[in-house]
Amino acid sequence: MADARSNAQLSLLDGLICAFLALPLLLFCAWFKWPVAIGFALLILHAFHKATIGAWRREPSVQTRLVVTIALVSLAWTAMTGIGHFVYANLDWVTRDAVLRDLTATAWPPEYPTIFNTPLILRAPVGYYLPAAAAGSVLGLQAADFLLYCWTALGFALFLCAVTTLFSTARQRFIACALMIGFGGLDILGVPFYRGFWASLGDHIEWWAGFAQYSSNSTLMFWAPNHALPAWLGLVLVLRHWRQPQLARIAPLMAAAVPLWSPLAAAGLTPFFIAGLNWRHDARQLFSLHGGLPLFAISGVVARYITMDTQALAHGWAIDGFYPPTFWFSYVAFCLLEFGFLALVLFRLRTFDLRMGIALAILLLLPFYRFGPGNDLVMRCSISALAILALAAVRPLADGGRNFWRYALMLILGIGVVGAAQEPERAFMAPRWALTGQTLVEISPAGQPGSNYVGQLTQPGIALMMRTPTLVQPDPPKPGASGQTN
Image (cartoon, rainbow, N blue to C red; front, side, top):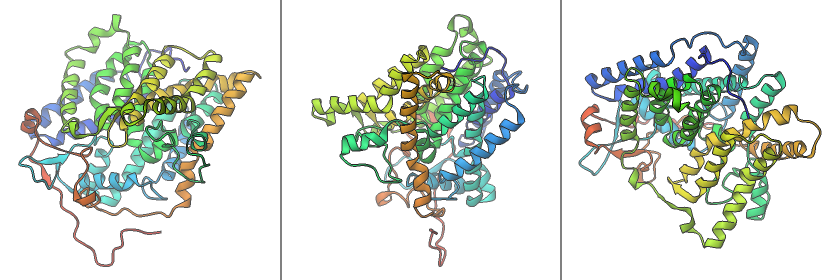
C-alpha cells in the first residue's frame, strides 16, 4: 500500500486538486438568489483560503518532464473515452450531453415541463458540468463540449501526478500510472463462467454478474468520469496526508464539494477520510468556526438539493430479486472475480493494512443493497475502494522477487487489463457521432426525464433560497441538420 507523505505541508498540487473539486461548488452559488449566493460564495472563498494556506509551494517529487508526459497521456486517454466526440462515445453520453446542453443554454436552475404545481428542476449532481457550462453559456455549446474534454483531462492529469507522489522510484510511478488506466477485475472470465460464452471484441462486459458491477478504471473514464474523478482525487488527498493535520484542514471543503460531483462516490470516500483523520489532535480544527463549520453548513444545503425526490429511485435488498441460493452463488462468484483473488494475492504479498481492510469491507458489503436505476450504489461507492487495491499492487509488482505470489499478481492484473481494454477497443470500432444539442426532455422516453436527473422543488428551505427556475427550451430545428456524423 502506498504510504502517506512524510512532509506534512500542503503543496501546489494539493491546492490545485482542492481548487478543481471546489470550483463547481463556487459556481453552484449562482443557483441561489443573489443575497444567498453572495453569502455562500464568500463563505466558500474564505474557507478555501483557510484550508489551503501555504499550499502553493512546488511539489518537489513532480518534475516538469513528468508533468508534461502525464498531461499528454491524459489528453490522449481522455480523447479516446468519447468526451469531446473525437471518437465514438458510449450511450450514456447522450444523457450527459443533454445535461451539459441544458446547463449551457438555460439560466440556472433549469426547469422542465411538469404536471405538478411545483417546479421540476434538474437535480442531478451537476458539479462535473458547471465549469464547462458556465463558459459555454458565453462561447456556445460546441465550446462547452470541448471545454468539458479539457476539464476531464485536467482532472485525470492531477490524479496521475498525485499518484506518482505516493511512490519513490520511477518504476513504481510508471506502474502506478499504468494501473490507474488499465486496472480492472476478471470480468473477461466472468462472462464465460456466468453467461456461457466468450465476450466479443469491444463488448461491454462489466454487467456479467447481472445484478451489480465493479467498474474497471477504463469503464469509469469511458462511462462515468463525473463519478470517478472526485472519488480518485479525494482518495489521493487522504493518502497523501494520512493522519496529518492538513487532512483536517481540507476535509470540510471536500465534504461540501465532492457530493455535488457525485453523492455516492462521496459516500464511498467517507470511510477513508474518517480513518485518515487524526481525531485526537485535529478534531478542534475540523469543526473550527473559521474553517469547518461554514463548509459543513453549505454541505447541508448541497445534500438538500441532491436528495430531492430520491425516494422515487429504485432501492431495496439485492437478495429480494433472487432465489436465495442463486443470490449467494452470484455474490460469491462476483466477489471472487472482481476483487477476491486479487485481495488474497495481495494479502500473501504482505500489503494488507487498515486502508485495505476498509476497502475490502466496503466491497464485500455493497452488493447486498441496490439503489438507483442501474444499481448506482454499487458502481459508484466502490470507486475509492477499488483504487486502494490497485495502488496496493504497485510496490509488490515493481519490487517483488521471483516468487509464486508475484507471478500470480501479474497474471490477475494482466487478465484485468485485457477486460479493461474492451472500452478503448469499442471507441475505434463503432462510428463516431456528433453532439446533438438535444435537451434532457428530447432524449428521454415519452419526454419524461428520469427521477435520477430531475426532482420537484419541494424542500421549503431550498425553495426559499433558490432563484426562480428557467424553463428549458429546445433549439429551433435547423434545415438539413442530421445531428450525427460518421
